[in-house]
Image 1: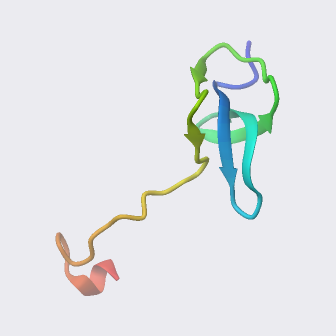
Image 2 (image 1 turned 90 degrees about the horizontal axis):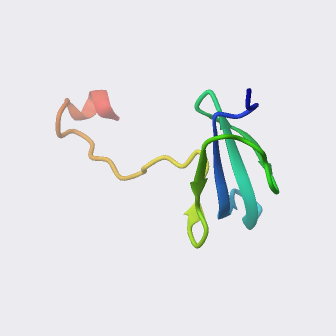
Image 3 (image 1 turned 45 degrees about the horizontal axis):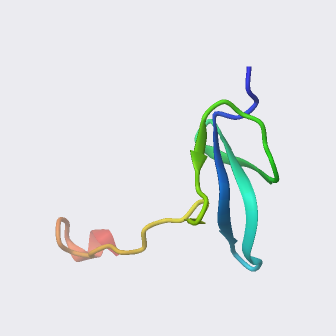
Length: 73
């Protein structure tokens, strides 16, 4: 049985305070579990030529549209 659920392979991983690195990113139970070269697992996403942002959150949001502004803030 594979140790990781998913592997994002061959991408450019962007890490806070480190910048860009070439690495494979392994996911286990929905969380980033490893960053390394050539991680073995069964399900692979080919990220060659792409940027990988582990843990990134979409910062685009609107305050006070669907709820009162005081609740959102």
